[in-house]
Image (tube, rainbow, N blue to C red; front, side, top):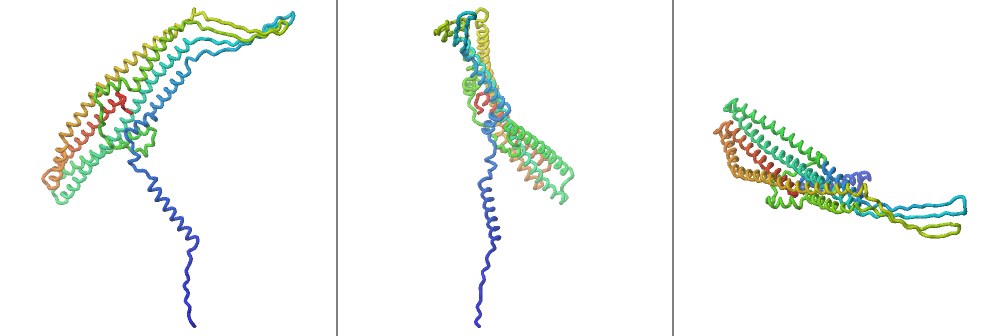
Length: 425
C-alpha cells in the first residue's frame, strides 16, 4: 500500500482572533493618546502675560470691579428718561333733564428736556467716576497676582540654589567619609559638616513651604487648580521706557485717567444743562369730543398747562451738578498728580535696584565660582580644611541668594512702574 501523508492546517479559534484584535486596537489607542493628547509641561506653564490676563478676568477684585462697572452702566443708561405721555377719558352728564352727555378722550404730552438731560449727564459722570475705581481695582489685582507669581518663581530659584549647596555638602561628606576610613579626619570636621548640612536642609524645607504657599495664593487669585499649576521659571527684567515716557503714558492714556477726565466732562455738561432746569414743564393735551345734546355731535378739546417754578425751580440739580463737576475735576487732577509722584518714586527704586544688580553681578560673577572650585579641589586633595570649604560654600550660596534678591527687587519695582504707567496689560 502506498502511504499518503496528510498535512493538517489548524485554524485559529474565533475567540482567539477576537482577543488579539482587541489587544491591538487598545495598544493603538493608548499610543495615540500618549502622542497627541498629553500636553507638555512647558505648554502648561503660566507666563507673566497669562497671569495678568487671568487676573483681570478671574481675580476676586476684578470680579467686583466688573460687577460695579456693569451696575454703573445700567444706571447711566436708565437715567434721565423723558416723562411719559398720558391718556385720560372723561364723561360729563346732566341728570334730571333731557339726555345730555359728553365723552372727552384726551392725550397729554409733557414737554421737559432740561431736567432729564441734566440728570442723564450727572448719571454718566457718576458712571465714569465708578469706572475710575474699577480700573484701579483691576490694575491692583493684576499687579498683586503677578507679584505673587514672581514670588513663586523666586522661591523655585532659591530651592535650586539650596539644593545645589546641599549637593556640594553631600560631596564633601563623601570625601570626609573616605578620610575617616583612612583615619585622617577629626570629629570636629564631621560635626561642622553635619551642622552646615542640617542648616541648609532646614532652609530648603522652609523655602519649599514658601514656594507652595505662593503657588496656592496664585491658584486662588487666578481660580486655578493648584495641583496642576506650573509656573514659568523665567525671571528677567523687561524693557521699561524712560521716566518721561512713563509719565506721559500714565497721565494721558491710562484707563483710570481717561475715565476721570470723562467724568469731569460729563459733569461739566450736566452743569451747563442744569442752568435751564428753572424752565416750567409744559403740558400739551388734546383729543376728540363726543356730545349728545340731545343729538349726536362731534368736536375736539385742546389744552395747555404750565407748572409754576416757585418752590422747585431746579435748584437741587444745579447744586448737584456744580458739586459733581468740582469733585470730578479735583479727582482727575489728584489722580494725575498721584500717578506722577508714584512714577517718580517707583522709577528711582527701579533704577537703584537695577544698577545695583548689574554692579553686583559684574563684581561677583567669576570670583565666587573660582573660590568654591579652589576650595573643593583643595579639600579633596587634603590641602584645605573643612572650615575653608564651608566658608567658600557659604559665600557662594550667599552671593547667589543676594543676586536673586536684587533681581526680585528690581522685577517688583519694574512691575510697579509699569502698573503706574498703565502698561501692565
